[in-house]
Length: 334
Ligand code: GLU
Image (cartoon, rainbow, N blue to C red; front, side):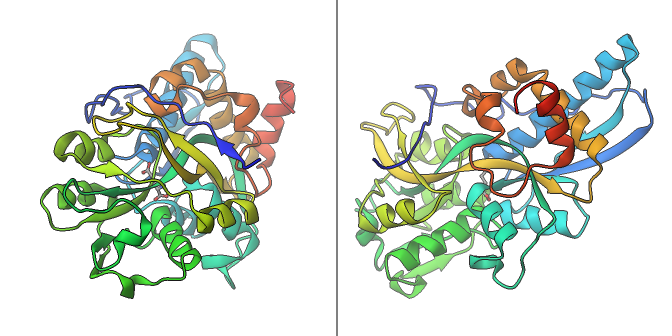
């Protein structure tokens, strides 16, 4: 049996911005401490993830001021280049936390793939979030129905630093091809790619992202783009050989053009930090999220099935941070 990620979706398009969250302007209570969480492009799910976490931290700070259990953590979650950028910035001490694909968490911690010779042993897992199927989104009139049709086309492989860029490179290698097979390989960001597809500047793009999301719906619901199946032997090989890949289904009805289920392979979005970040801080962040998990589930459709029992193990390959372990043990989750 091949491994499967369960992707749940709402069966309708979602309006961009409907789930954008602004940080609350909470006053200082405990000792103030500012933290930054690395996310992804503003129309993706990482941006919603980081901002949801900040919102829950500010909520628990506000509650703590009433009950006397104070913490002074203030949080921001700026848009960034994505997974590998976030891991690099955590390593530099520029970010305290970040969202990263489970494949890049694995490779960073183990010093493999893109991180060969650059092993980051201090990387720590905090929890996993939503499943992220890798998707090739193709233009309405591109004539692309499968991987082989990408030959000679204009394909966006993603900006350097994004998770999808790395996963696209892995997939090209699994198919025994390089960017020279494409007419053009662009490096647009996740924010630029849907517009470029709708404007006819590219024929397809690769994106690893939670389902559904505003960025993809700009192309599917906006200009008839489709998501193709990626379930041939190269993808089966990737799933069989790597613990962090699993097959996923994007259900019929997810977007306006989703007339049938799409099968592809994917990863998990994970929340990571460094062992240099204090256990007390990580404990408070984890506590804020887990005590408010019901709220978290409502902050984006990709979060609706979040389950703490799975979040503390699925997709995690770096060791859990000591502050996270403290909370999970206290709650009997571990
Ligand atoms: N998986 C993408 C990355 O690692 C980001 C997806 C998102 O922004 O939701 O860059």
